Length: 417
Image (cartoon, rainbow, N blue to C red; front, side, top):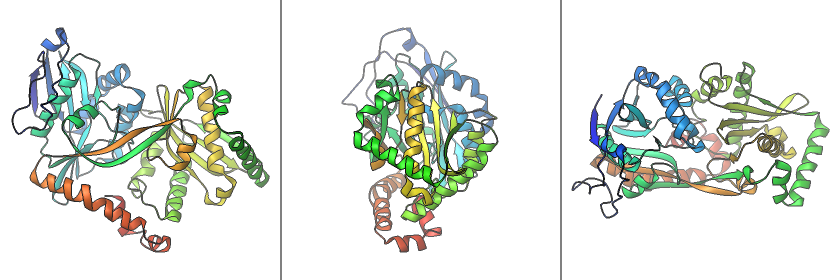
């Protein structure tokens, strides 16, 4: 374990020559007693040390994490470790302590592949937002700046690859100062359910035509068999439903000739089965199911954190596509969420058209790359900045029939990029 003790100086000083940073834009820290304390930065590199952080991590999350940091909760990442931590992936969690108190957690992993060592968010590819937990202490930005220096010096990585960083993430200001390479731009649409007292009032912002259309879809589906809706949180039954949802999602992706790194990996089913069952370290995972004559027509997997619900998976059986089963499930879930006190219903990235039809607004979500070595710079500029998107665009341009034929090893390789 490498560690560094840094004094929280009363002012941010210009980075040393050759270091990454924006020396033209110094940020004075607030003057108070916290700044006089020492911040101890350390890497946590093994599973036992991560598990030992549980109580402190939860306390930090409860007191300072905004709801959009739901994918940085200890329980979520504990389940991730159980399924995604392997021989090629090493924990590199950077922690910061002031007077012995945990005030920062930068949850990272070191991944080795094709002769390159990457530092990435812990939780990839399941987590949909990446960020660092940071306590509301004076000098917080300076701690994050010093944390970056420590990370760059001691991580042993060629490149830091940070996917899905929200514009309002804790680390965004730092990535902008460091002038990192933006390798992908997406948006995450959301509904501001808190702007109305209940969903009936909120729904009035949609056109009367769209509301009539959903009623028509409901009648059409109901003619095929009695419609039932249920929400399930925990219990052994969710395991079968998760398996069904993953199978349906893969079928839907294949029918569209689309690729998904997360769904190409069989671990996703085991991960969500454990997370949704909730018997150990629950993480707010719940399922919603719309059934027709007792058969699941559409399934939703969502996460609840504080005042936010994030829609992670929504899928419908292709046999019910023309009946609008997915639309009807989403409407019912939104209604229940609004009436139960959810303030933000997060549809997550990317900003697909059906999400934008429902949403009030969107937040920008960016992928960042920060090279630390010459090898990392070549990877960032040539592969991430140029080649990867052209390979994906070339795959997307193929006729659907050819993409289905390539749905095996080649498509999985493209999805993993």
